[in-house]
Image (cartoon, rainbow over all chains, first blue to last red; front, side):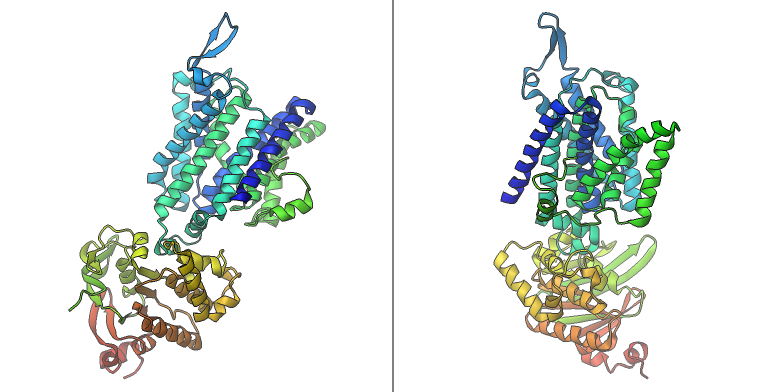
Length: 337
Length: 239
């Protein structure tokens, strides 16, 4: 418990420091990439609880992200009107203005995604392997198609002029909370039970582990944080459309996990950071040699090479322990890029 | 006569269109070791899975200590003392021996009792104590079998269902496993044992049922069945 509180406090302090650094010393474009890294970390770590710990192959993470993004953005945009006298947008729901407005909107997005996780999880988690992947993929597609057809949320154009509430502190603060909870989860009896389900569902069942219920709980947990990540994404990018949350987004998060090492929280963090920075870094190379399209080819090549030489991912199922971390990078948290 | 610990009455189980168990009836009384012997695909493991609720009979009843088990999920039976030890491959390969054992005590909340039972498990299977920090998947076949049994014991079973404990093991290891089964039974655990190794199973049980193509062919005290010409011809390689 003390250890958990320590990790959380260290994470929040790092988020605060990183925010100061980004706000004062880093140009907008790298700052954006740093923020996107934080959002990727939340997505990857939360999906790791479903795909890595519990071994349930979900391909619908972007769907939950979309729900979180739209619900939270709906709270901060549509529920406001422009007041010419005050010369600014004012919320129709007074609670949503001011200091608590943004976290409340984020929570609403997370809870909406969690409820979706419950509704989707109960029927689909009876499926295994490929079948579950296809069912969750279908869910993700349904979400984006529904959003594209609702005029109230902008149809295919999506929502625009979302207030830019999500700064580095919010993003990395949320990432710290997500990492802390997930690590706590992993070490608890509950986490052991999830791993037991991954290892051998039948044996878990005869040991007294109610696999069906556990899987749904893991799914709800992952969906909640995907919703939070979606909310942060919306308030970072300032506009969202269904195209942001397509099938490729879900695949991207899965690739982050596989790259880092399925089941390892450290791996999820590292995979998220690498796969967010890599396409951006390759952009410069592409410009140098003046060969458009090279970027995606290199991206694919790097992934293929990694899988050839390290199929278990960078970390396998291991974790970077705090002790090792202190020796390697004194005074810094692993999620700081 | 007192209620049997476990009773299957005219149980029919299907896998899709395949009729796997045809009117199976059997009973296990308190303190007994009952064995179910038969060849490959006879329905032994299916009977065991039905007894602990992993499979649902299309007709017939399963009762445990007088309670009908229809609709009771497997994981809820563990706390009531009905525990299955799946055959050796049913361990958690990426968890350590100790973690495997601790998951056996998942339904229990008495920490002191669990710690005592963990020590007892290591005393029963010293090999596991030597390998307590090793991943389950790195153990030999016999050690994995020991782990599966030790893990089931961590749940403090009153009725232990054992699925082919001798599967793929060397004769010496098989003997050690059966010696342990005797010992567990003497300490008060009722056992339903499913085996292909009829010779060993009949030596280490009180009563036996012989199953073929999903039907119980005959049953009786194990000592008698060992001399029964039908058993000798089909399962003991004699006659």
